[in-house]
Length: 153
Image (cartoon, rainbow, N blue to C red; front, side):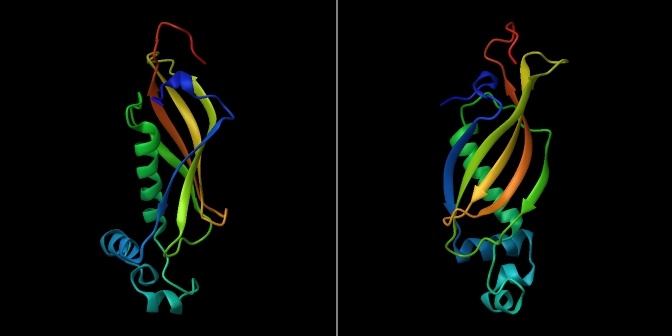
């Protein structure tokens, strides 16, 4: 589906793809961007309160962003985002976990200053293979209107 502002409805949710985290990815990402010991080695992970190697929360966010772009934003009228709020890492993501992204629409409105676009407020919900919620993110995104002369809401 090619998404435009009009395609989003408050209360609707769409489940997108999943990403499986490998040991190599977790360590490589952490080495570059979040070099805390429990993200870098099995031994340090076991010695931590996590009891094993875990992915950086930023690694989880990045993987979910990749799913969002591939499964929803590619080919859409997306104009980017003014930002993310309320990022919550609720459970650790471990080697072999497969995390699936659901995007829930909270609200939407046409921009008053630029009526050719609208702001869609969403909550990302990422669940592991056991159905456990591991990540939530509140996001605002700009989407172009298919017909900016119509009053969409």
